[in-house]
Length: 125
Length: 131
Image (tube, rainbow over all chains, first blue to last red; front, side, top):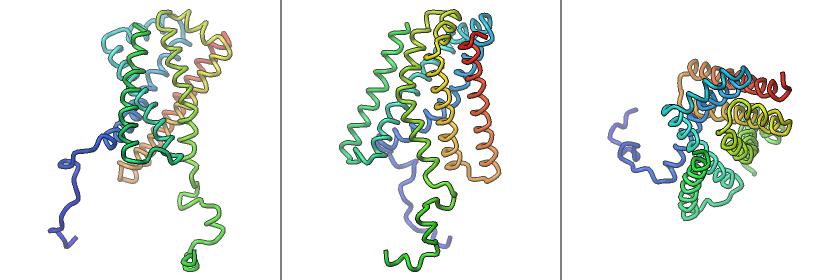
């Protein structure tokens, strides 16, 4: 291009992302993480089908600190993607597009995901 | 719509609305359909996990030995993997610009998702049928 002196549009490095944009990219990140998380799901049900010994191996891994950390991350990613996905479905039917509604939905999604994660772990532990 | 007289698209093409990818809103619609199905299925799945957490293999077998539970679990597995491969396809299409690499990754993700989905369904079926 022969126009090197043109002003550049705001770049990711200097542009502070608004919360809604952060939520949007987090939706993608959690989606990717959850796809990898399905490996854990497949391992769990397959081990159960193979028998008691194999199932016990999965249980002991999931009970380790690494397993619990993965499960905790998995649960928050799942609930974030669930809550934010619900907001996406409302967008799809044309609702809650106003700036103020979007900001409110950001907060609802974050509180919802955190609350569901907390409730889940309180019930498990 | 007077400007449409200059369009190179045929009237039939416009009515069908399938666009250049020849599938219209099919991908978008399935992504939403599976998302909708996953809302209650995910809540049920997490509730099952909470219920199963205290019990070992026996608890798993008796829970998924019930036909209704096995059915809901298989629906969850099918919807989750379908939703995952649709979403991953979009992410790969957005960020991987090299044609060959993009195609290879999409094929890899789709094959892996279908393989893991069938493996998981067969495993649940094995327990559900008491085999």
